[in-house]
Image 1 (cartoon, rainbow, N blue to C red):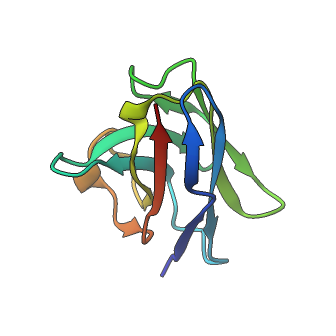
Image 2 (image 1 turned 30 degrees about the vertical axis):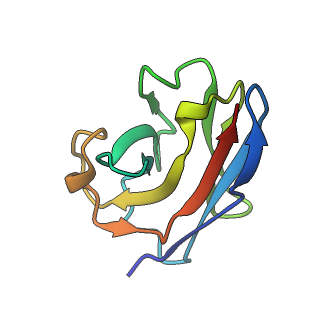
Length: 124
């Protein structure tokens, strides 16, 4: 069983930066990819970014490419999402997720483990 706990959400002005972290439990041998998704009120959950647990390969949605950076912190056994140049449309609950096998990273249904989410609000 893999447990994921997000932290770092909050309120920031447009153009500002915020960093999220996804702490994983010690039993990470079954993780293949860790991804970040977000869901705004009234909208479907959408892919933000992902990173391969072993190969560190990164993937980004077009909407965040160049503004967000996903990375793996080995010491903390966590995956971080550094967000900059934030826009009001980035406002959402951000979820960390992990899958166990190699599957397309941009599809929420391909992820088996999910965190509880953390709110990010960007004011204009």
